[in-house]
Length: 303
Image (cartoon, rainbow, N blue to C red; front, side):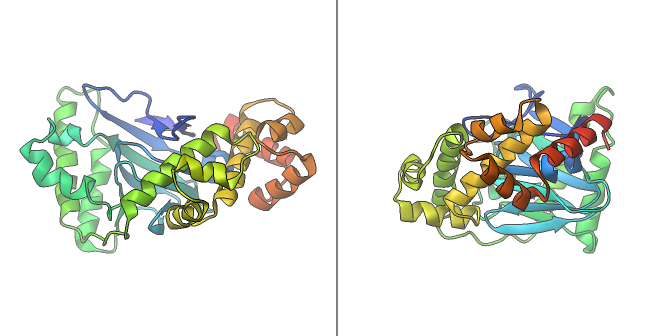
């Protein structure tokens, strides 16, 4: 299982890059120490793979357009393919989650197969199903969580690993099919696609002076529709998201580079160093210099 302390996101689309994802076996497993991400959070992103996760320790908040859900130790769930989501850890114990990321074709085989149509599509093509939570207090779901936990114990170096893994994921998938499914948000698919288009534009041009009409144009919608879309999907205004994203990129540079703080502020779209320092403190609770010192220490020591 690969240990990850950060995620790689495409600069243009903000899809998560999945190093090690092979066409002949579209799957990776990871041990995610989310408490060591800059600021203890992962920004909004999406990926075409399904994400099955089990909380090994600590508590993690998942946010999707449908809302937020907190997962404590021993819980877990599924994030559907191509669903916008972000996470943030709660203070306390070390936050570690075990994650299966895989293309649905790993279970379904060829496009249009009977397995795909009968078992996969009811979940992967359901616009209402963004996040499925598994509660250890429910006996049936606790049994499913036990299968999920045990699936991470498979030895990838042992002959037959791929078949055993696919069988284990198939059993878990059958259990997920038996769970109640939420109702779709009205117009959810259209809102999500517009939101992704506007997010991709913001992620590519965040360092530039941006206006709301430019962001709206990227989603082929009016300014009013842009506000509605961001509120529906991310629960913030477009300009609030832009500022939050600039701060997240600044935080990333503070930890990953030795660039001067003034240069980072300018490169991330802040014309005033004093304003950058003010909004940075509001978001992260410390100055940029203090943030750099704290998170470089965490990254270097692995605490």
